[in-house]
Image: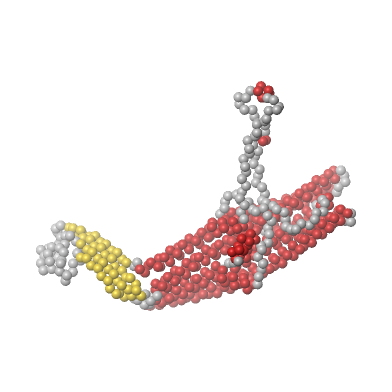
Length: 523
């Protein structure tokens, strides 16, 4: 866009050559606004005319020629069928584009999927400690074994006889009562990870808002430039036609006509470049918003955002509160601190209630009723006891604790880096906004002065105090200052968009209409 902006400065040639036409026009009173006239995107290609409009309707089959000739002139001609209503594409405002981008942009969807994954992990962390039960079941062949602990007619290895089926089911587990912080620290770490995921979604939305605003303002600037070029082209075409007539009559300067034609071709080139930039910006909007159907931009000039710059400290404080990257780093510190406490708690055992239940049956084996005889093939048992569970890996656990502490120091350093880096980004965006605002105010004043100069020269030409060629300089300066004002408006809006992204404070780059709607709520 910077390249095309620099090239647009060649518009001065348009106003130089258009002096005669400007002279011929009556002086107009100064308007209230110095902004370009309303404009819209280039209209779509016209629909091909129907046969009923472009050509005469053919005679219907079966119609007698004599009947057609005998028709009286006073008879009403049948009305043509109404033309189909052409649907205009919807207008996408900046607010609508931002909403679509936050809903459809792939990076936002990716971050939302990761957030759902983290929330599922948090749910798992809450249920995991109380569901650590093991259920076992078995099915095996069992030979026929008869008798008691005193006498049995079968041998120790009864490989002959009838073979039956034996089965067994059982469940056992531990309900924790005191884990020295393992459960609560696991919950804290999982909750902090969810917070990281939530701010990651906000980060992606914050980034895509900046990209949408850049593309939107670029498309609006290109449309304003096309409107300015179109206005100048009309004046040049009218003046060039008059000059051609004068040259044919032998009264005009052919060299001036050649220069004017060169300038006209230069305008065509600049218009092509502006259309290219507009199409690129609109293509970017389609990708960012996910809106693939045809749409149009608002038919209004690009205006400066209503936000008034405050002191730098306000934006630095806002960045510490709202910037997603800083909040992600803070949540990461909380998660790593919980991880350190968790690894420290693993140095201690778990105390809880051990529960178990078992049922076994082997029909081909005699059930032993003596309670002092162990009978693995039969029986029902259940029990509960106060238990202690400990994984005896003291030295490896110390190493894992040292790893968790190192990761905590790493994320703390990341937090400091984020705070410092974000502060630099905020101040850079703030200074850019200050510079753009000063340039915008200066160019607005310069454009007003250039227009006043132009009007005074026009009036002087009307009364005969100025010559025709005196219109060249004020016309050229007015064109240059108007485009400089448009470019400064784009720079100022984009600087505020960067400041909004750097601080995470979306109200900085809010549109005028949005500000009016949100004003009662803020009160």
